[in-house]
Length: 470
Image 1: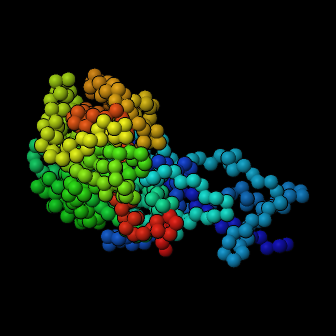
Image 2 (image 1 turned 90 degrees about the vertical axis):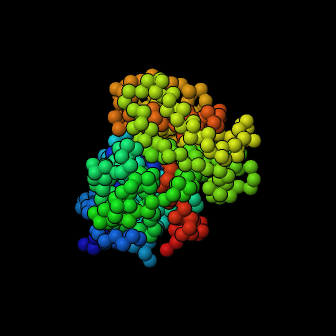
């Protein structure tokens, strides 16, 4: 009896232990069909993380091929190795794997259908026949963590084709770190506890992989709080993560870097804004000259307003918002914008059809979801969506007319955002008044994608035809 060749198992695993409670796990045009990925090898990361073994069980694929009997005249499928390559010898017709009844990998978010697979430029075409894409474990792994005033978010990704990457793990949770900061000037104990618990999960994810480079940032809440540095020392002790507090200019630049692929070739001018929880970054981008591969190189003016959805809602109220209160919020932000000296740097382009606004925040993605009347938030339909002036007007008016319970009931808002969304709309309206545009493009991506793009570019992983360096 001939010796039977054992088939090596292949792994098909969803990102290990991922529990994403906030729908915003990051953005980018999805590479369809890559909702799960094999975990990278375990090892130490870049910030002195302790080496851990991934706890995810490894399961074999293709169990149907283990049958010991044959159909008459149809030898079983055999797999053998020749010079390190898999060679298939088959005498039967290929089976349709769709009939195996395998379930798709579960969604990563409670309000999002698609698992996060991000391409900062455009979905890459499938490799031509005869070419081989490097397995995930052969590619360098990069990570980006953003601890903001409202959210704690992590992305872990590997580079693919030039300027693109594929997310292999993600985490996002609303922690409201800046809760009460406006009134007290300090981070509250319950808010810090929530953030630390979320960061512990992020730390476990990072320690389970061999991370080539990572950048872990904290923004406005830690930047402005009296005890911000003290809190980050606690994070380092309890979660094993060392976060850096970035300045507002860096935050604006990273937001621009994360959205570069949504600015089309014929665009002449863009006002990109990121409405955060404690601050709002605005960058004016002039593309009339020779275009650089990095969109951030074209920033001609920028500002960071010390106001975001959390801080504005705490001052004016977020649950019960009358039209008079909403107008007062808009006026408050408008007064802050009036002192922005560089606000007119794109005045020569505002009348051009190739000028537009580009918004990256929960506010604009929420507006887009309401505009599309989605039964469940779907990043694939929202990221990159164009909205005209009238559509934005209608959506803002619609939200202002809803009471708190109606906002809670909308699947694209929910209870977590119902008391913040009108503050975000007020900031948006103040921005639109200064830079009126017929078009607004929606970006479900931002700081983390910008961090990953810059880390990969600086490391040179895309120099060799888009494949990561060894």
